Image (cartoon, rainbow, N blue to C red; front, side, top):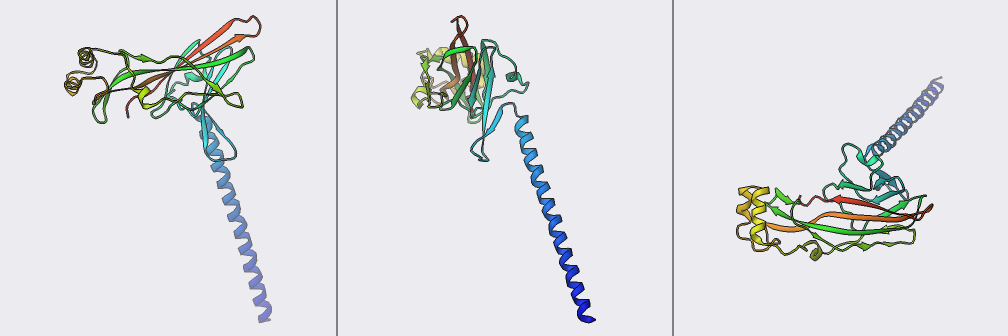
Amino acid sequence: MKTLHNIIIILTFTTFCSCSNVSTDKTVATQNDSIVSDTVNILNQTSNEATITNGDEEADTITTIKFDELTVSINRLIIYDEDKKIDQIQKDTVEMYAELGETIEGQLISISSDQLKGLTVEQRYETSVIIMNEGPHCDLTDWKHFYSDWKQLLTNSTGQFTCNKYSEKEYEKFPKISINDLKQKVKDKCGDKWLKLVEKVKTPTEYPSGVSISRYYLRVTGQRKDNGQTVTKLIVIERPMGC
């Protein structure tokens, strides 16, 4: 009888352990499902679109600009768009503000349209003066600028356009100016405190003055399939100049 009693105890214990393991597995599965669901919701709540490719965990952020005749998608670009204006149908010219550290250089652009043919994309950039004071800075984006020539973008094997990249030398291009005009602009825009910082500079690229890219421009052109009329859209992307 004692042996039988021991066998019953062992069987009961084994059954209890098995039930406990099943319960734990279900709990883990439920938690994992919740994590996946939350992740998808977070991605869907962003102002830009997120696409996960090749089964990787890394997500590519895509900014999509919608016009009446076409849609332009810029890969790996995050913009500041608190009011979700980018979700609206845009006019012929649209201005966007890139988040700190964001750039279109080297990124891919996809265009979809059932109304246009012969689509091309051109790119140019603009430079402005920035006055630096370690962390704080004063940007003279409403003053003089250098504008590069328009350059047509190349396409890859899948028909996507590849944005141009720029060298450090290109970043610092600026028209010839009077240094006194620069100092007067600094005084008017930034104040006397900032003017003292540039009292001894002789060129706009001499620290604490500097020159950098302040805006990118994309010009998309195509012809209407129904009447051959040329359609042009301009995308202006303002780039934060300081940290």
